[in-house]
Length: 306
Image (spheres, rainbow, N blue to C red):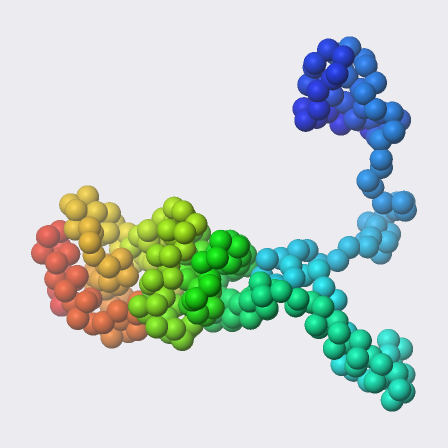
């Protein structure tokens, strides 16, 4: 079994065509035949398996590392149960000993201010992400952004909840599945002004180039919650594209534009939704929807019967 890689260079001829022969345990140059190393270490398992079942039963792996846990998922936990692995009751003396071991194990896990910060921030991050319903990839990105902010000293003097909420908001923008700022504010239970300040602080401090939310990015989610058909979604996207070509989207709140486009699309496709219903989904006011609706209908010359 051989494997060709270009990460090594032959010291004899300078070629990059290096072959790793795992059967012979040799690393050789395919051009001049020079043996670079004859003591390769086998990084594979020490056991053999001939079926898929044997391979599954003999493999010894743990859960993958994750940034969403304060210790990246590497720590162990001592159960509070009063029974051992075989279900037998533990004696009081042994139970007192396990209690002391558990207490010191918890103390050794959090031994610095950064660890204590992460121990409080990561559960809050998972709570916010669960309530707004974002996938695991976005949670990992949010945890990465928060850890970078913590290492850069941006969290000092700021509320942990606000910085976590700002990280989740920026992670959603990074993956082009933005969430309205009002939704993040309501879920995280933080002040909107402080949340906006933390977002700007992270963008400036970490020099992130997070894409700004686009009205079209909100259409799939809003349409799903409103139970609109694919025809209505397509019509709403067409309205937004025409408005963008005419320069009507500049300086406007993207959530308000998306809400108004869905309202117009619902009327045109016979799937009318009430302004109040759309406003609750988009986290905007009915006045905003009406203003954007009137502007789009007038500028795009749409034949909409109210």
